[in-house]
Structure formats: C-alpha cells, structure tokens
Length: 243
Ligand code: ADP
Ligand code: MG
Image (cartoon, rainbow, N blue to C red; front, side):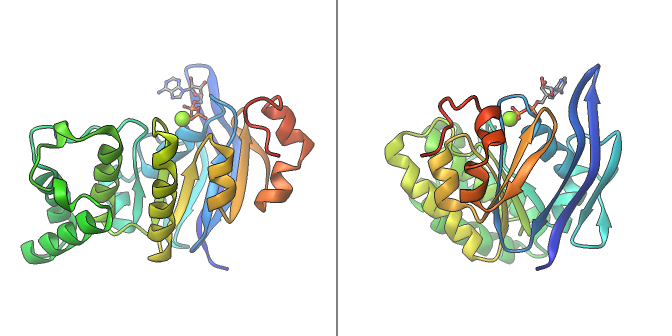
C-alpha cells in the first residue's frame, strides 16, 4: 500500500510545552485512520503541523512521496491536496451557503463554470442544497459542519483531516454523519479522523494511531489497539473504555 503521508520524528514545542515529542506514523492511501488519545496529547497540533498552521521544530512530513511539508503556506498545501476541517468552523456569516462554498471553489478551479458545478455537486452531496440561498451564519450547528466540509471538498483534497467533526452533534445526528464520512472516503479520499467517541471510531476506521503526551503509544487495527492495556491505561479505563 502506498503511503500518502509520512511523519518522521516530528517535534513541536510551545514555550516549554512539548506538544509533539518524536512522533512518527504513516497514513496509507485510501484508508480512514483514526488519531486518538487523551485531551492535550497533541492531536490537533499534529493536524496543524500537517496543514501548515504551525511549522515543526524538527522532523519530517512527507506528502504523496514527493512533497516535503515544511514552510509551505496552508493554501499551498491545500493545492497539493492537504485538506482539513476545524474543530470550531468559522463560516463567512454574511455570505449565503452557496457563495461561501463558491468563494473557495473559485480559488481551486480553473473556470467559473467548473467552480459552480463543483459547488452545486458538493451542496447536493452533503445535503445542503436546500440551504444554498440562506446566510451561512443562520445555519444550524450540524449544517455548519457540513458547510465547513463542503468548503474543503471543493479544493479536491487527497487527504482530508477531520478534527472532532462529530463533536456537539446529537446522538441522532451521528449515524448520518458517519455515513457522510464513509461516502467521502468511498470517493477515494484518504481520511485522518480525530474523534473521542470510540464507538464511532470502531465503526468507521481501518486503523488507529494512539497518541499519548505527544508521542505514538501504539498503532494497528481497531480491535487489537483497543484491547491493548497501555491504551486502556492512557484513557484510565474511563469514558473511553471499549467493550
Ligand atoms: P489535543 O488536540 O490532543 O487535545 P493539542 O494538540 O490541542 O491536544 O494540545 C497539545 C498540547 O499543546 C497542550 O498542552 C496544549 O495546551 C498545547 N498547545 C497547543 N497549541 C498551543 C499553542 N498555540 N500555544 C501554546 N500551547 C499550545
Ligand atoms: Mg484537539
């Protein structure tokens, strides 16, 4: 299997906080990989380093076998196919849902026509078509998440990183959300999925990487990883225990 992303011996500190500590793992093309670990263990920092929000202190990030990600801006990385959503989406509240997606699509597609086609297709795909003409700021929370997703999807990501995209959803919205993530993956998009709800992780993911205190605790297939005593200990067997 081809490695879409390789993280090698990555390090990042913030004023004395060693957020990422000699972290290494790979993401394979086509998979849904869950990145899990206790609060504050460095998951979001990892996504921020891959997407270019932060620059690593040392270590390597290699994308698609040829691009070493180091000082490229977020937009440059997005053009290569590195996409991500944010834990708290911030839509352009004064634009309609359609214009909010189209604004991004225009930056990443050669013609206006192509950008419009992609926008409309994505609004349809993410069940936002009936909201197209309302103001983004007026969308309910769940729909805001899909708007954020639509804005990444029109950039044609190869790797899509979802940082707690299910947080704040009602349990009744969970199944539909998981099925959307699955359908995105079925379009050939590799997914890095950060999530606290372990049942969602178990349903969705091909592999799990577990972080603890900035480094890799273990990785592997979901059943083996969740049966690992070190993983259970890292989560203190609390809410995260998987039966
Ligand atoms: P997680 O997403 O796993 O909950 P984070 O990556 O957000 O963890 O945080 C890892 C550690 O790095 C935490 O101790 C956090 O406080 C710290 N951290 C993250 N971003 C910053 C920042 N911009 N400035 C200072 N400390 C940060
Ligand atoms: Mg986080």
